[in-house]
Length: 101
Image (cartoon, rainbow, N blue to C red):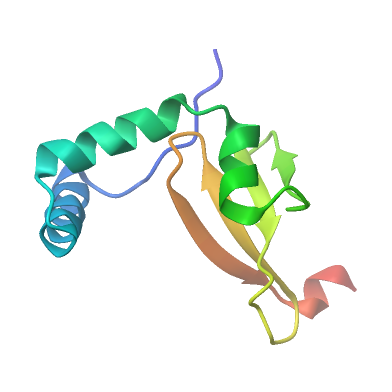
Protein backbone atom coordinates (compact mmCIF):
# COMPACT_ATOMS: atom_id res chain seq x y z
CA UNK A 1 0.00 0.00 0.00
CA UNK A 2 1.23 3.48 -0.88
CA UNK A 3 2.33 5.73 1.96
CA UNK A 4 0.17 8.81 2.28
CA UNK A 5 1.84 12.18 2.44
CA UNK A 6 1.85 13.83 5.83
CA UNK A 7 3.27 16.70 7.82
CA UNK A 8 6.96 15.89 8.41
CA UNK A 9 7.25 17.88 11.65
CA UNK A 10 7.83 16.01 14.90
CA UNK A 11 4.91 15.34 17.25
CA UNK A 12 6.35 17.94 19.61
CA UNK A 13 6.48 20.59 16.88
CA UNK A 14 2.91 19.84 15.82
CA UNK A 15 1.69 19.96 19.43
CA UNK A 16 3.40 23.32 20.02
CA UNK A 17 1.79 24.77 16.89
CA UNK A 18 -1.58 23.31 17.89
CA UNK A 19 -1.31 24.84 21.40
CA UNK A 20 -0.38 28.25 19.98
CA UNK A 21 -3.29 28.14 17.52
CA UNK A 22 -5.73 27.04 20.23
CA UNK A 23 -4.66 29.88 22.51
CA UNK A 24 -4.93 32.47 19.74
CA UNK A 25 -8.36 31.16 18.67
CA UNK A 26 -9.68 30.87 22.23
CA UNK A 27 -10.22 27.13 21.84
CA UNK A 28 -8.96 24.07 23.65
CA UNK A 29 -6.24 21.88 22.19
CA UNK A 30 -8.82 19.06 22.05
CA UNK A 31 -11.13 21.25 19.96
CA UNK A 32 -8.30 22.05 17.55
CA UNK A 33 -7.36 18.36 17.32
CA UNK A 34 -11.01 17.47 16.59
CA UNK A 35 -11.09 20.11 13.85
CA UNK A 36 -7.93 18.68 12.27
CA UNK A 37 -9.44 15.18 12.34
CA UNK A 38 -12.69 16.44 10.79
CA UNK A 39 -10.77 18.19 7.98
CA UNK A 40 -9.05 14.90 7.13
CA UNK A 41 -12.46 13.33 6.51
CA UNK A 42 -13.49 15.99 3.98
CA UNK A 43 -13.06 14.66 0.42
CA UNK A 44 -10.02 16.33 -1.11
CA UNK A 45 -11.87 17.91 -4.05
CA UNK A 46 -14.34 19.57 -1.70
CA UNK A 47 -11.46 20.64 0.56
CA UNK A 48 -9.65 22.27 -2.38
CA UNK A 49 -12.86 23.89 -3.69
CA UNK A 50 -13.64 25.41 -0.29
CA UNK A 51 -10.12 26.75 0.26
CA UNK A 52 -9.18 27.88 -3.24
CA UNK A 53 -12.50 28.18 -5.10
CA UNK A 54 -13.98 25.91 -7.75
CA UNK A 55 -11.49 27.14 -10.38
CA UNK A 56 -8.41 26.25 -8.29
CA UNK A 57 -6.57 24.48 -11.16
CA UNK A 58 -5.07 21.93 -8.75
CA UNK A 59 -3.34 18.86 -10.09
CA UNK A 60 -2.31 15.68 -8.33
CA UNK A 61 1.33 14.53 -8.14
CA UNK A 62 0.96 10.79 -7.62
CA UNK A 63 4.66 10.22 -7.00
CA UNK A 64 4.68 12.63 -4.05
CA UNK A 65 1.01 12.19 -3.07
CA UNK A 66 0.46 15.94 -3.17
CA UNK A 67 -2.21 18.18 -4.63
CA UNK A 68 -0.50 21.19 -6.21
CA UNK A 69 -2.46 24.44 -6.43
CA UNK A 70 -1.08 27.53 -8.19
CA UNK A 71 -0.38 30.27 -5.65
CA UNK A 72 -2.24 33.23 -7.08
CA UNK A 73 -0.54 35.57 -4.61
CA UNK A 74 2.94 34.75 -5.99
CA UNK A 75 4.24 37.88 -7.73
CA UNK A 76 7.83 36.99 -8.57
CA UNK A 77 9.40 34.87 -11.27
CA UNK A 78 8.70 31.17 -11.50
CA UNK A 79 5.72 29.08 -10.52
CA UNK A 80 4.41 29.72 -7.01
CA UNK A 81 2.46 26.84 -5.55
CA UNK A 82 0.69 25.50 -2.48
CA UNK A 83 1.11 21.77 -1.92
CA UNK A 84 -1.58 19.99 0.10
CA UNK A 85 -0.73 16.67 1.73
CA UNK A 86 -3.12 13.77 2.35
CA UNK A 87 -3.41 14.80 6.00
CA UNK A 88 -4.52 18.27 4.78
CA UNK A 89 -1.35 19.96 6.01
CA UNK A 90 0.32 22.16 3.42
CA UNK A 91 3.41 24.07 2.40
CA UNK A 92 4.26 26.67 -0.21
CA UNK A 93 7.10 26.94 -2.66
CA UNK A 94 8.34 28.37 -5.94
CA UNK A 95 9.74 26.50 -8.93
CA UNK A 96 12.37 28.82 -10.43
CA UNK A 97 12.05 29.72 -14.12
CA UNK A 98 15.30 28.00 -15.10
CA UNK A 99 13.79 24.63 -14.14
CA UNK A 100 11.45 24.98 -17.13
CA UNK A 101 14.22 25.72 -19.64
